[in-house]
Image: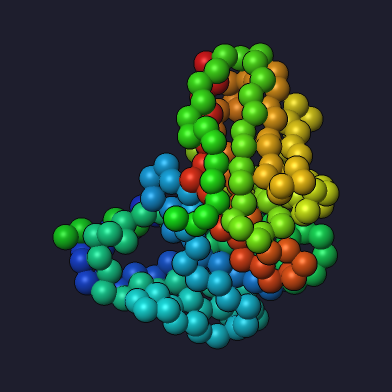
Amino acid sequence: QKEVEQDPGPLSVPEGAIVSLNCTYSNSAFQYFMWYRQYSRKGPELLMYTYSSGNKEDGRFTAQVDKSSKYISLFIRDSQPSDSATYLCAMKPLRGSARQLTFGSGTQLTVLP
Amino acid sequence: DSGVTQTPKHLITATGQRVTLRCSPRSGDLSVYWYQQSLDQGLQFLIHYYNGEERAKGNILERFSAQQFPDLHSELNLSSLELGDSALYFCASSVAGTSDGEQYFGPGTRLTVT
């Protein structure tokens, strides 16, 4: 079983829809959670970075973390065709030398005009 | 633009050959991480350097090695290349020293082994 599970999709929504992307994890040592957006053949772009359980909002994006359930989500409001990309969740532990990120497999999102 | 640069963008080489991928971190970042992204394995951590010292290793093959130089740029060396090494290779940088450093990725090097 992978440490981080993410539904690969593909997910297709109409423009203006609210998108919900999710990841679950099994390693309780993970304390920092990130969402990256990756356009085809480009480098991952950091969208959201959270530590605490709860919600963090940045423009049209809201990241939600539920550590008790080991479940994180990214919500995109008023989705645009330019949001079409692969979304990767990533996480890492609080302490120790293992500061590398563990990624989900990514969800491919298409927003239709 | 994340501020992380990688060269070359594309590399095509034959099996058995050796290549070097280069990464320059963002100004002020001391940590460099290397990741491999393939279709079947997703993004996998290879190795982490902090201020010239190796800090952690992931699923990095013995044929692969890396180093970080005094000017903080890093190189990933891949030798005895096999077809399965074809992938996107990313480096990321962060301000280490705090465990909560955000990692910013470069544009990647696409390696094709024929």
